[in-house]
Amino acid sequence: MTSSTPPSDQPTASRPVLPPSTAGAAPARRRVLAQATFEAKTILRNGEQLMVTILLPVMALVGLSQTSIIDFDTGGRSRIDFITPGVIALAVMSAAFTSQAIATAFDRRNGVLRLMATTPLGRDGLLTAKIIGVLTVEAVQVVVISAVALGLGWRPDLAGIPLALLSVLLGTAAFTSLAMLLAGTLRAEGVLAIANIVLVLLTVLGAVLIPAEQLPDALRHAALLLPSGALGEAVRGSFFDGSIPAFSLVVLVAWTVGLGWGAGKLFKWD
Image 1: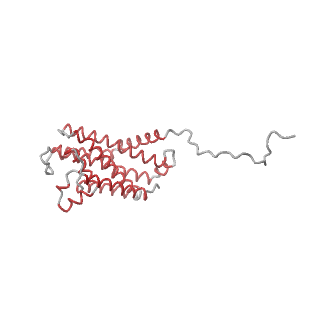
Image 2 (image 1 turned 180 degrees about the vertical axis):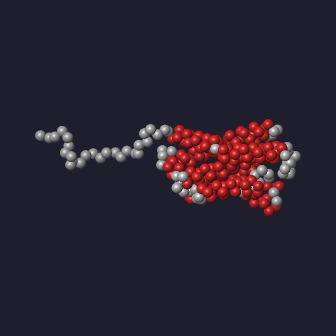
Image 3 (image 1 turned 90 degrees about the horizontal axis):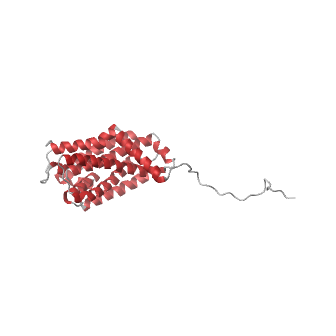
């Protein structure tokens, strides 16, 4: 007579090892879009971030185009036509670099990055969401700045718009890489100070608002090698002549590769 159930000490067929359950988690794309929306809203609802990313570029646009506080050679163009491309470049720097560096550094100090990395969103999803969030903020910046500039008489070369968008994307990649490198290696308080100082120095000395050829001789060539100078020259070339200087493209790509490699190697999540 045999039993219908195997004895408890008899070997049984091995059971398959199931992967960690993700039941209840939304699809990856939805998770990334939800986080990207949160990232963009956090910036646009924060008064300090709003001032840095939107108000300061608009104030620079109005102040430099409607007054003669700073004298510069417009090359026969109106002041609003001359200054608007540089202001767009400045706005990209503020959103992709300063804002992201400070926000990510404090998220890292408060343990937010470490906790988010353990959720179904994951590290790759979080980084992707941050990039989409930056691009969303930049879209808002470009719309607001362009609307104000058009109201002040800006008449851009429409053929240069695709190249200007390419310049903005390359600049975003370079300055976001710099932001991640700082935020992932330095203390939050240090990032707060350094990011603001670097933004001011690059704005004043980095050929963002005016071409490098109008800077003092000692700065002229150095500015062209900076990501700020390359971005400014690329956006101006797009709207002025419908072309991007090849040297500026090389500089932006080189900075993106170098800074991206450094951030990938040195970034600390906690």
